Length: 290
Length: 211
Image 1 (cartoon, rainbow over the protein chains, first blue to last red):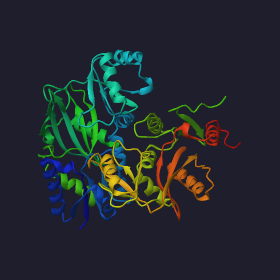
Image 2 (cartoon, rainbow over the protein chains, first blue to last red):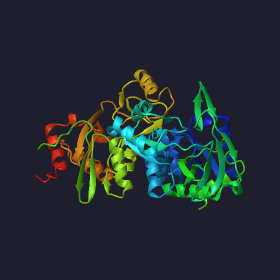
Image 3 (spheres, rainbow over the protein chains, first blue to last red):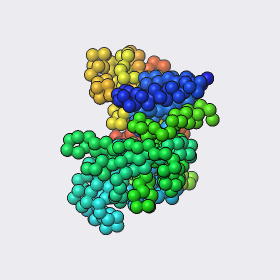
Image 4 (cartoon, chains in turn brown, green):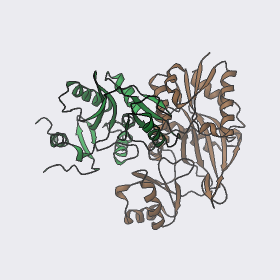
């Protein structure tokens, strides 16, 4: 019997969906004759006593999840998400650099630094990349700091806001679509697939519209219904980051599939894996039985 | 001509096939961080590394790595509250900086400080217990060289440079009866350097450190 630590924080436990997902994970571990225990930030010193660590809290190099991941890694304990995956996926500059380096298809993407930002640089970006453009603050999650801009003044207004949080920002060509594929990849293999249907009044998977938060719809899709090129692209994108667990977002609206982003710590509480009942078993097997 | 150490300027120094990035700070998502990252992505040897600077500025990780290298380090506890005072407190969240620590001597002030650092309990903090009479002191290290009279601090500066490879850093220590224990590594403004330190840094930047 091995011991699985599941790293959580208060936010993870704040929703019924998250709690249900955690219980499913613990049940899966116990059904495989392993024990599972929740580890909170104050228990971080327990991590070296575990046989593996599964992080289920928002990851970022600047928060305690990174400390948990590094602690596991430096103790030689298998961990999802590993520190390198957190470092790369939490920062879209780093993530797109890795995807570009490995030749993974992404929308036209450039980076703009604070010192380069000028009216002429912005004009050049519109001339080269067209309109609208999408600006992203590198550490955004749930589309929080992702904005579509149509002209230079909008660009400047949004970029100034994002530049306060990061010296570089992402400038990307806009790809129209009403849904994103999400391909769950573990150790180079697809373990689930779903579609995120984008709400009709926005271009993001989550947005605030007229003061109300609107969420995307989630539909688990059986493997036979997922286009082969989408699966291959998802696996290629995940492999460009590492061999852990990733949720790869792909747009394929006009047949030219491209990766929008690779997420470490992908959500599993929204029904993403409802047609893939073995997901937690595969994760636990990867962590404890390799 | 004198090398200008202007605020936020970044200097690239090539030594032994490695590009050394000299900057006032190496925080995540700053120009210096992305300068390092760009070199790494293109396969160009660079120091410090991007994961090293993340470790250096996250107090528990910094102390873990420094301790493994034999440097005495302060005991560090991660929690949502501070159990014992006096203590030195660091935030552990997206907005925290290792250069912003609080030395708290009593629980009355501690409560308020903890509330501020944890954003009303939203994020954890890390605290280091101080014994009565212990104080915090800072020393600048430039390419692993530090100029205090204390031999130990000079040795620690060399070791920390071997661990993290940061050309310009402020070493924050807890000074007690038994000597100094590392508390954190923090960024260093050029304007805070002494004349001797500026001269040494300029020498490194212009490849004249042997003079």
